[in-house]
Structures are given as C-alpha cells and as structure tokens.
Amino acid sequence: MSKKWTSAAIILILLAFIGYIIFDVALRKDVTPASAVTSEAPEPADEWIVTKIFEPGRGPLNAVGVSDDGNILLGGESFIACYDKDLALKWELKAEMPVTAVTASGSNVFAAIQGTILVLDQNGEKTEEWGPFEDNAIITSIAANRDYVAYADAANRTVYVLDNNGAVKYIIGKSEESFVIPSLFFDVDLGNDNILYVANTGKRRIEKRNIDGSILGFYG
Image (cartoon, rainbow, N blue to C red):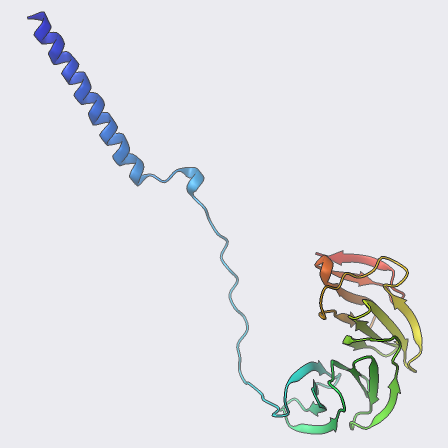
C-alpha cells in the first residue's frame, strides 16, 4: 500500500514539475527581457520645404553664392551669372574654364577659376585678375568681407588670406599643423569680425581661427 502512495506522490511531483516548466516557457514568450528593450531617439522633423526648382539652362553648376543685397551668384563650367531674388537674370559672363567657387562683398564679385581669382564689379565687368598664387592650385571655396578675401586651395591643402588689392597677407597650413584634406571638398568662411571657419575634412571638424591662422577652437 505504501508503495502505491509513494508512486502516486512521485507522479504528482513530476506532473507539477512539468506543469511549471510549461507555464514558465509560455510566460517567457510574452515578456521581453529588459536588456532587449531599446529606445531610439525620434529623428528631427524635416524643416526643408522645396518651394521652387530653378534650372539656369547653362550646363552643369559648380558654385553658388549670395551677395550682400540678396542677389544670387552662379558659377558653372563656362559661365558666371547673377540673378536677382526673383531669379531674373541681371548679367552673365562667359568663362574660359570651369568656375569652382564664387562669392561677393560690397560691390565686388570674386570668382575662382582653378588657381586664379576674377574680380568683377556689380555689373559683371571684370576689373582685376589675381593669381595664380601657387602651382597646380585648385580653389574650392572663397569668402570675403570688407577687408579680406580668403580662399581654400584643396590641391595644396592651404588657406590664403588676401587684402582688397589681391596681395597675400597670410598663408595658413604651411608652417603650422597642416590640414588633412582627402578630397576636393575644402571650405572656408570669413565673418565680418575677421574670424575664419575652415572645414578640416580629414579630421572631421570645423576650425575657428584668427585672420592670421592661429587657431581659437574647433567643432567636432
């Protein structure tokens, strides 16, 4: 008799154990471990709204700039053009070679063609031509204020600062720590306070510099 009770007890224990395992497995399917829960920050909403697409119809476009009075400057494979804020053509100048950068300050427009800078008046007439300042130069960006013109030369990994007469005042990236420029993407901006902002693309950072090139800090 005791053997029967013992056998029955063993069977009940086994059934209870099997039931626990089944219940535990079923419960685990419905519960996600805390370590597996991930939350992603929501992406910022796209604030850009395309209101108009403008096609100049003059071939590939290489450079875009905006003048102080809101005119739009375009540089292409064979042209430099100026449009007003309503995209009406104000003037156009034929270029013998591709224009790689364009900007304006005051009444002057500055357009880079390889290693040379063309200076144009507000009517698109060429008044001066500066450079080349270094062999095999490729100017990829140009910026200007009332006192200086700065340009980035991606081929030689340097930034040149010129005065309003086209004379070289500073060369940045030669004697001090050089820029790391792995491609022809090399940009410079110049504020009215004579502070330079240079995209040191190989180091993935934007550098803030004095007009003489001394570094003030960087972002990135």
